[in-house]
Image (cartoon, rainbow, N blue to C red; front, top):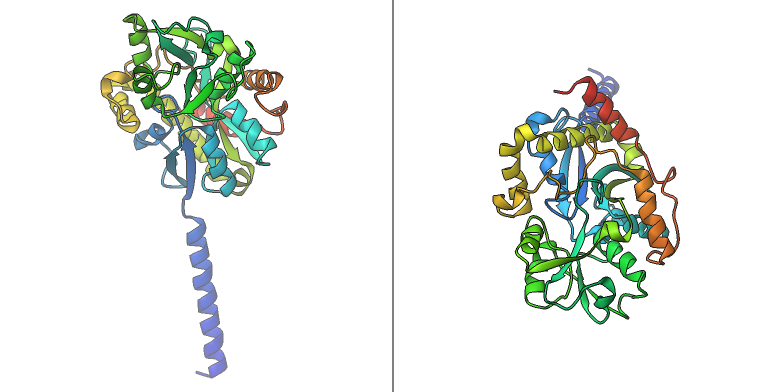
Length: 341
C-alpha cells in the first residue's frame, strides 16, 4: 500500500474516532450542582433519593447537592461557578444582583412563609427573659443562620420598624439552626429561631414564647427559592428541563402522604436529625410549598420591596421579568400532568 494512501486511511480513522469520542462525550449526563442550606425545610437533597420516582436521572443529568450555612455563602459559590443552582432568600437575590453582578434566574419554589394555614419563621425568647416585644431586643443578641438569609431579612425588617439597627442597637450572631436552642439555653443569644417541632413543644411546655414572625414583619412571602445561573440554563437547556421535571417529581414523591413511612426516614437521614423530629413535616406547623414548586413571584417582590423600604438592602429591585424564568417549572408541571407515574 502506498504511503500516501496509508496516511489518508489513518487520518480518516482518526477523524472517525474523534467524532465517536465527541458524540460519546456529548451524551454524558450533565452534572448539576445544587446548593441549599436549611434541612429539613429545604428538602432538596431528598428529591433525588428515590430513583424510581425520577425519569431522567443518570441519563441526561446527575446531581450533586451541597449544603451551605445560608443564602449568602451560596452567592459566592454561584459567582465562582462552583454551583449551578442555589436556594436564596429575597435579600440574597438583591445583593447578588446589585453587589456581585450575578446573572441569575428565579426558577422554582423552595419554601413559602406565612401562607394561610402554614408556618411562618418565628423568633423565640425564653418565657422569663423579660423580652416581651421586639423593641425589647435593644442591647441584646439575636441568633441568625447567616447574614442576608431569610431569617436575617425577617429580623432586620421587623426590628427596623422600631428604629433598631443591627450592630448598633442589637447584635446578630451567626450559627446553625441546630445550634440555636442550645445557645438560647446557655444564654449565648437572647432570641432566635428554633427548629420545628421543638419550637412548638417548647412553647407548649411554657419554656419559650413567640416574639415575632416573618409574617409579622413582611406578610406572606416567597421565603426561599431556587435560582440558576443564566449561562448554565442556556448552555444545558434540555438537561435543565429534565432536571426540573425530576426535581418536581422528587418533591411530589417525598411529600405524598402515601409515601410518608418511606419518605420520613430519608429526610431524617439527610437532615442528620432523629426520625421523631420529622413528624411536623407537611403539617400546619411546616412551611407551605407549591405542589409543583411554582414560586410566588408577587410575594417575592413583596419581600424585596419591604427590605428596600427599610434599607435592609441598598435599593429596590424588580425581580420579574429580568430575573425570573418559570419556563422550566411550568414545563415540568405539563410533563407530570401528562404522565403522572
